[in-house]
Structure formats: structure tokens, C-alpha cells
Length: 378
Ligand SMILES: *Cc1c(COP(=O)(O)O)cnc(C)c1O
Image 1 (tube, rainbow, N blue to C red):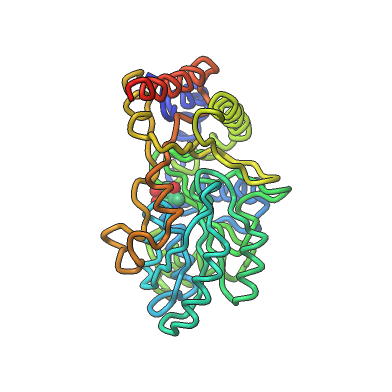
Image 2 (cartoon, rainbow, N blue to C red):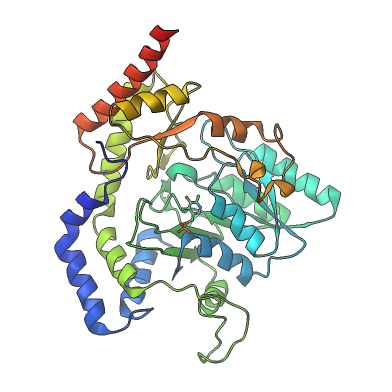
């Protein structure tokens, strides 16, 4: 069986270092915040080029806390692509704001700028909600078009909270994710490109005043003193053990990203004629959180791969505007055609830095077999 992700091989590579760092936390006795967390936050700033990195409890909290910090809530509109993971929409609703669903580009699966402009204009015209925030998603590991998004946000007087849960380490030109826009949120959930051994996340911003508010929000809205409560916050801190694990993994992260890129290139070369391979954002580096192809024969492809011991996954089968929990905020079937079509056609292939060329070739052979078997049967 080919591993879809491979955290065991990674752990065997880092075992001595990770074990030593975990034991140092255990010996030190500071299990929440403390020196391991401070050190990791400094490493995050150095790596991304962001002025502030605020580690936190999860990628979902990393999206929710900035909304709370900025007072985004009832009566406010947050523009979000519909083709995303549930957390993006969830964070908006937890804050009490209303998600306005936007379609995606069918090639990159990133937020569609034309539809975004249209949705902002429609929302202003309707007058019921106040546009406040754009929440683009760096889906599958590529950065959204932040040059265009930042310009639009300035024009429209909106803030950007980027959902980069899948794109920590991605780059556009010389700029890393985390330093591309007002606020960037990421996740260190185990299956993400940089993952810990539990839940974790981080928020990046160059705005020092906002960073101070976020640090307060992360610890129950504390003021200068711990028992001085100056705002409503959450319990949103990162555990020290997770920070220690992340520091260890960050030390080999660039090497792992290079391996992911090699896997992606091998898939591209073998599959470009068989299925629709991922479109790349120009002048950028993807971290390949997922290698996601498109096919109108998804069921057959998945069944054939499964028979041959090749795991595949569908991220995501239902766009947010059609989810029962969020559909009241959408315009129903047919309203966001690119998101709906993506949900019908996408399938993600095994992707991790430890796949051998033989394993990648086996995945590609299974896909070719699965699809040609299907053709012969017709
Ligand atoms: C994983 C993910 C999140 C949430 O991260 P958690 O750490 O699991 O809370 C949010 N958005 C996207 C796009 C994700 O992939």
C-alpha cells in the first residue's frame, strides 16, 4: 500500500531530535507557552519574513481570532471562496458575521477575482451587510493572487485574512506566505505540509498593534496582567510540546518541499495526457499540500486505484454554499458553477516527501490502467 501521507518515515528521520526536544519540554515544566513556543515563533518570523508570528491552537482558531480581534461580527460580510475546507466558512459564522460565497478559478481553484469584485458590488448595493473582510484560501498549497487582492482590499477599504492552512512555505516571487498580506493564518494539523503531533496553527501580521491584540485574544483577552480581562478572547494557545516538534520539523522543511516538488513534476510528466493536472500559479512555489487532478471519470479512477492499493482522496466533495449548515448564506445549486464542477471532478493523489520514484510511477500506472480498463469496458 502506497502511503497517502507518510508521517512515520518522517518521524524515523527526526526521531532523536524530536524525542530530545520533547523531553526538554517535559523537564522544563512549562507545558503551555514558555520558551519552546517563543523560540518557534521567532523561527516562524525568520522563515516567513513576517514581523509577527502568533502561534495558536489550530488553523481554525487562526482564522477566527483575527475576526474577533478586529471586531468583525453581526452585520458584517466576509467574502470567501466556496470551494474550501469547512473551517474557512465556520470561522466567519463563529464570529457572528455572514459569509458571502465566491467562485473559484477552474484551473487553480483559487478565488475568482471577477466574481469577488461582483460579490462585493452586489453586497454594497443590497445594503444589508457591511463588507469588512476578504478571506482568500491558498488551496492545495499555492498562494492566491495577493497583488490583486491587496489592491482590491485597499480600493474597497477591506481587510484580508488569508487562509493559508495548506500553504505554509509557499512563495510568490521573493515573498513567502505570511508576508504577502494584512493577516495570514495557517495550520499545523498533522497532515499539513508542516504538521505537529496534535492541533496547532499560527497567525502572521506586520501590524504590531494588531499582533498585540491577537496575543491578548489568544489568552482570554488578558491585559497587562493575567487576571486583567480587557476584551473577550479564547483559549487559543499552542502547547509547548507541539512547538518543540514543529521546530524540529521546520529544520528539514525546505528539503521536504524540494522532494514534494520532485513528486509533483513526476506526476505532471506522466499524467498530463491522461487527466487534467494542476495548473500552477506563475512565478510561485507550491508546497503541494495536495496534488489534485481533475477527471470526469472520478469514480472509475478511484475504484481502479483502490484495487491496486493506491489511496486517493476527494478534497472536497461538496462546496460550502451547498452544505446544509451554510446553505442559507448561498444561492443554491448552479450559483457557483466552477466550485460545483471542481467538487464533482477533483481527486487528490498520494503526496509526501518520502514517495519513491517507483511509488509515483505505480500511482500513475494505476491511473492509466483504471481509465483504459474503463474505456475498454464501454
Ligand atoms: C486544515 C484547514 C483548516 C483548518 O485547520 P485546523 O488546524 O484543522 O483547524 C482551514 N482551512 C483549510 C483550507 C484547511 O485545509
